[in-house]
Length: 152
Ligand SMILES: [Zn+2]
Image (tube, rainbow, N blue to C red; front, side, top):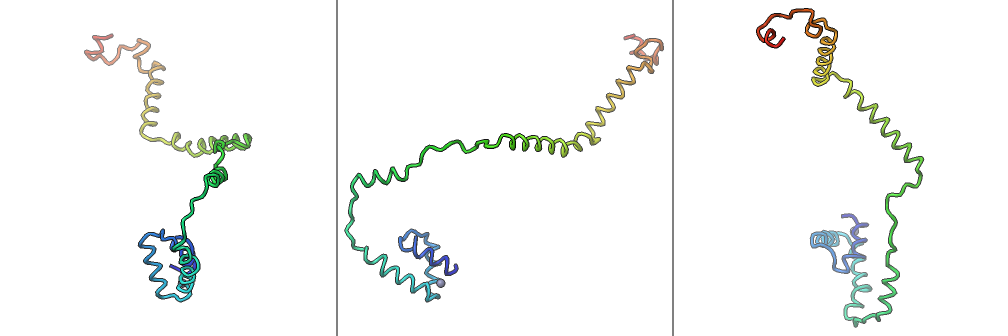
């Protein structure tokens, strides 16, 4: 822990006794080896802690607390997501759609197994539609199997 961080903690949580034990022990280790920080710690104890150690606790009047509450009360906030520039938002959405199409295109164009299967099926139906096989137009007697004779 460097001197800057130690001094920052000395002036805040350390003198208030609010530090976690592990951080407090790191500061004590630093103070053992650093006279500059130790001088600051002693001055803080002498001027900021000791004078108030036996001070009488005073209860603030209610009107003071009301003033504090009013001062720190946070007004209700508007929704966080506000579209201040609709044209800019529209352009951003259009750009996002355009980029999605550009980058997703190779996935749809690629000849994966599904695409090949669909293409085979389309070619098969196109072949049936031409009547080249004789199944559709009935001009051919087929291949003459028993099943074919039964159904046709
Ligand atoms: Zn130091």
